[in-house]
Length: 237
Ligand SMILES: NC(=O)c1ccc[n+]([C@@H]2O[C@H](COP(=O)([O-])OP(=O)(O)OC[C@H]3O[C@@H](n4cnc5c(N)ncnc54)[C@H](OP(=O)(O)O)[C@@H]3O)[C@@H](O)[C@H]2O)c1
Image (tube, rainbow, N blue to C red; front, side, top):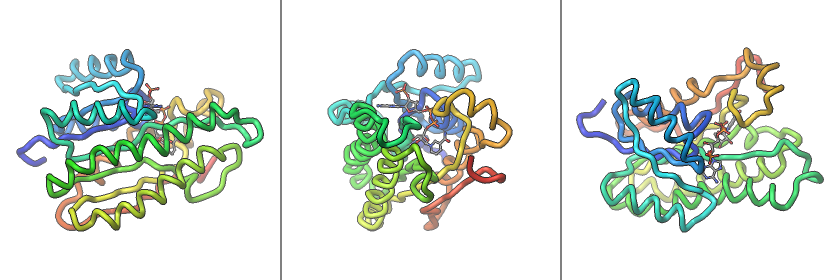
């Protein structure tokens, strides 16, 4: 680990993959800025880490609000650098297109797609001024393979894949690395309880995905793993 503390902003850090990533980044000595809507869950994580003599800073944020994202980025950057953004906040519905309400469709697109775009948009000027940075997007295998009952989710993830693939080409000149991770089924609260119970042995863990995120961030020199697809060894659910 480098002598200087590196700043990592993680969205969706109150649960699942984001929570595990906050822990992993804290363990390797990064300044972790943890965001999500549920402040009580963020506080719980902070307390848990404090017991292990680790610390993180909490920045409650609803990524679906561009104003809120703007505010939070301003707050973090007033005293710290954001060397890495982990765009992880996400929601889904597991419903067929005909059964999704407009509210559910809006929630999925506004959080997964627009929320990630807002975070990128507000962090980018700081990374450009800083001469580099890393943007890690937790996309999904749903952007690479078709699964039913996930139309809005797939649209949001394919949209983010498209946006970030273009972004990557635009920001190479600024030494900003854009890393897209496409995890398959990972056991987190995103899945219904019965699916988690039935497939717990088969699904990947948040900790493993978090380890991969940290590994991707720590790659040194002029090398970058731009696209990382990970699946359970026994395949998709
Ligand atoms: N689990 C899987 O199998 C899997 C596979 C591929 C990709 N992914 C992706 O991995 C990411 C993390 O999901 P997970 O599986 O860890 O699910 P999770 O445990 O449900 O975590 C989702 C996180 O997103 C946050 N979030 C949701 N809406 C938000 C908003 N509007 N503003 C800020 N934060 C928000 C939640 O916090 P609050 O509710 O406190 O805001 C929570 O911390 C998602 O992007 C998901 O699509 C998951």
